[in-house]
Every structure is written in C-alpha cells, then in structure tokens.
Length: 305
Image (cartoon, rainbow, N blue to C red; front, side, top):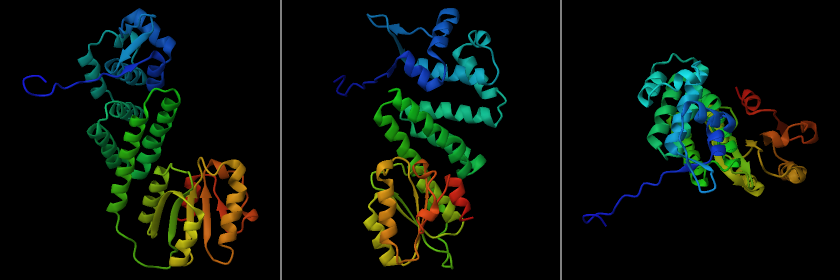
C-alpha cells in the first residue's frame, strides 16, 4: 500500500531475439547487425549473455520494418529520432500493400498490449475503406496466419491469442447483426456448423455474413457440433443445406467414417452438405451423393451467389 492506495504494478513483456524475428519478419542475424552497426536497439543481457528485448524494442523494430517496406534505407532510418520515425510513418505515401503491412504491424502491437481500442481503430477504418469481406481476406486472415506462426515459435502466450480471437469474433458478429433478416422466399435455409472437435469458427461466421447479405436465411450452430444434432435440425426445419469447413477435424483416418455416417443419416431426405477445407480437398462428390466438396471457401460461396 502507498498512501492508502494500492501500488500499480506494470509488467513489461520481455522477448528473445527469435521472438522479435517472429513478430517482425526481420531475421535475427539482421537484427544483430543493426545493433552493432547502427545501435538501433540496446537489449539487456542475461548472465549467460542472452539478449532480452522489451515491448518498446519490439514496437521500434515494427516501425523500422514499415519504413523499410516503404523504401527507406536502414542507414537513413538509424539517424531518425523516435518522433521522426513516427512522423515519417504518418506522412509516408502508402499504397494498398503498404497499408496492409502497416495494419498488420499495428494489430500485432494491439495484441501485445491487449489494446482493444487500437484493434478497433484499425479494423473499423479498414472496413470503412474496403468493406468487411475484403478486410477479412486481406487483413484478418493474414493476421491470423501470422499469429499461428508466432504461436508455433512461442512468441505469444495463449491469453494474447484468445484476446485477439475474441475481438475478431465480436466484430464479425456485430456486422452480422447489422444486416436485415431475409424475407421468406424459395431459397433453402442454410445451416452453418463445424464438426466435433473443430473450433476454428471465424471463417464460418464470415460466411454467415456473406450469405445473409445475399438474402439467405442462415442458422449458425457454431463449433464442435455432433452429427446427431444435425439430424434434429432436419427434423425440426425440414430439408436444409448444411455448410461446413473441415480444418483440423475429423482426422484424416476418420474422415471416411464421418462422411459415411452423415450420408446414412440423411439418405431419405433432400438435405445436402456443402463442405470445404483442406481436409476434404481431393474428395469426389460422386462417392457421396448428398455431399458436394469445394476447393475453397470462395468456390463454395460462389455456389450461393
């Protein structure tokens, strides 16, 4: 306690040089050269002489990466103060590719600092400029892919991944809710789901947005849905089209059993399944009369244009 109030503890995150490489895309060898030649970073070292970097070091390196991508030379960047670096980023003329790179860098910083406002500022501006669909494919998908790389390199903790995934999910649901509910027509109801143990639902929510915008009535069941539950949906709603993305499950050795199971469940119905994801690539529809396979989400969506 300090003067009757609790002291605020600020914990600064520490990174290894390999983690900096994962965040910025700048090779560890290059970072070391820049330290020695230009003094861009001055990391502390452990007793065993291992470099340790702060989140301020990471932010500086992300900004340097932006300027290099915009065509500036590292020798010139090294002469700039922190304020001059910031102003250079704000003033530089950027094309779409540079804007995307800038957005990805800022999103990384937002994830690092658990900064919801920073995340929303970037994403909302992108949506205003591009629309939600292009923002998802050009900004959020590459960002999620980079998160996957950083996760594998242990450069981020689970809480940071969960934080950013929740923000993306909330943003997608918000835009889905802004769409008017489709009027009854002759279009079939679409039921979007993920199979058991499949939890990567962001692309499925994005599909819901696109299909609802096109006038389809969509029912989102979400992640990890048992096939028996799909039967109950049919019993309640009649013949529907089921849409799913197979990313990690069922495992390849169980895929044939899963497809045979749902084919058996719906043999005497007019329901149909539309499946995509890398786990079903190469599978042929004639082998499963109630199922159509697609090479990509885009190809699947084009079927419902």
